[in-house]
Amino acid sequence: MADPLHEELASVKRQIGDFFQLDFENGEIHLHSVKGRAFILPTETWVTLRRELVETFKEGAIPFMFQIGYAVGSSFIEEMKKVDPNPEVILTKLPEVAAASGWGRFTITGDTKLGREVTFSVSRCPFCHRIEHAETPICDFLVGVLNGLSDNLFQRPHEAKETKCIPMKSEVCEVTITEVTEKTAEQRHWGSYVLFPWLFNPKR
Ligand SMILES: [Zn+2]
Image (cartoon, rainbow, N blue to C red; front, side, top):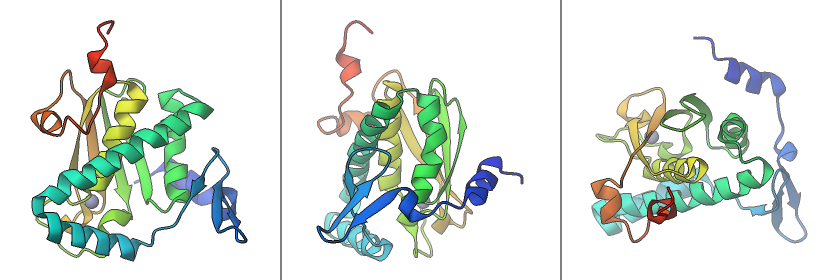
């Protein structure tokens, strides 16, 4: 299937130095696009982290990973908005940023203007890397990232669901975000951690 975005990413052949600069003396990695630092977490460490969280917190690990992801996605958008607040522009840049950060190959389809329903398809997803088999989708961190990212980007609450996951014998991990008029039961349950300030703004 023709994938113009992938062809574009493949043809540009960007190097890691195009996005990050290593200050070896001070042990810092600086971002080029926005002011800030980054650090590297090996995917193998992520696998261990996830396994330990599941062993310790059982099903509680799922909302835990989701909440961490939500904050990451929301704060990422805060930074991106400083460059250009237009959601369509940010979502156009996102695959390149994701690729440069080792987050896999993103394809984004749907209503990228208003965010009523958007699907993020991720091949080579790092968050389920090396996991051979799963009965249910397991990229809870990624789901949280895309939920936080979408809520902040479109300033509306969304529900995010992973509908395909590579360890479930899929080619890609796929997360669909859908705008909701009010919080879902799960969002209400975890409401003390997930904030939707605009829901409490009487002007909207
Ligand atoms: Zn997945």
